[in-house]
Length: 418
Ligand SMILES: [Zn+2]
Ligand SMILES: [Zn+2]
Image 1 (cartoon, helix red, strand yellow):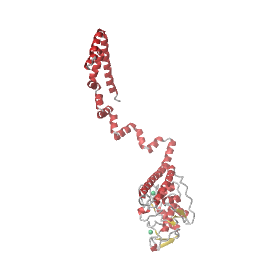
Image 2 (tube, helix red, strand yellow):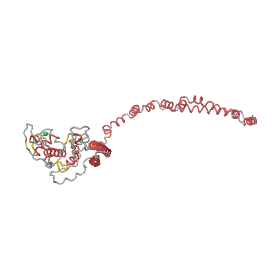
Image 3 (cartoon, protein in one colour):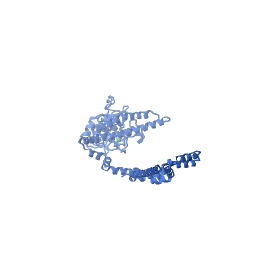
Image 4 (cartoon, protein in one colour):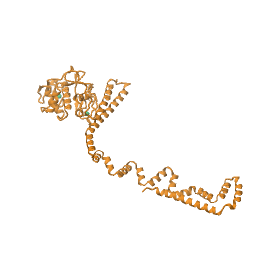
């Protein structure tokens, strides 16, 4: 089949009654475009659709046996007699313009919407069309409606809304193509980066450059060992970038619509309404912070929840698990002291009350050679141990133990929060 390099004009249309009507390409397109997309869409989206439809119709060969180029159903492109001013203008504006790949008019497939990235033609049909590559798409849908190859109509609409020209839209969906009226015309200058979108849209645009480098790599990398690993890596990078781009597009739409509303509310001081509308979680937190925190703890950290419910019990339980001795002490401090260091305390008490006898007893117990010497020393001092001093020592000892006990008990009781 000879390459088709120009728009078909006139075009032969197979009517529903079986007759074939030859009509000007633009007249035919004026009956196609409003059947493919609503005439209320942005003009650049309508123009993109007109050019895609012109290119697609120019390459159709399915009805040659009937002496026609296209039929009037979705088998080729839906056509009807009704015209609309907006779609008529889009067709007139793009008169003669088609999409070309290496000089030939392309089969400009399009479908209702994709799911964030369009499909490679060979992933849907058999033929790998070099200009129908999978590209990221800002249409915002999560499922495919139609075949998903070529231009995504909803995505074209989104791009048009954010300031892309019909040429930029077509070049986004069809890879490595030129969009011109005549084959020998100089290609149009590269469209400037879209600036009417928001900041996210601009970031997405530059990420698309990186993504297109991935596509180029996939084109040139052989499909066999040892390149398979590299290919799958590049593919995953490309897919991830696609996700980032789709996300940025969504963020941009959000920023342009919601952002304006937020700005207005900030200016008018409607902060309560702002929080209530855009951060209902935060709002409900403000309504009942304590309840929210409690609920959150109870759901997510049952242990912490039981702590705030009964801190003393919580600490006791944790101690029991990890430090049993401390746990026993905490349960009954004076009792624990009596059991565990009662003997020592008694000895300390004895020492304070009667240091000389205590030391003697201790030296004997140690079987120390100093014991006899100490006994002599004790005898020498004898009466020097004034009985009043002894009484005072006893009193001090008693007070000290009493205070110590009180401190332990009070510390524990005061430790309980209200
Ligand atoms: Zn047909
Ligand atoms: Zn899409």
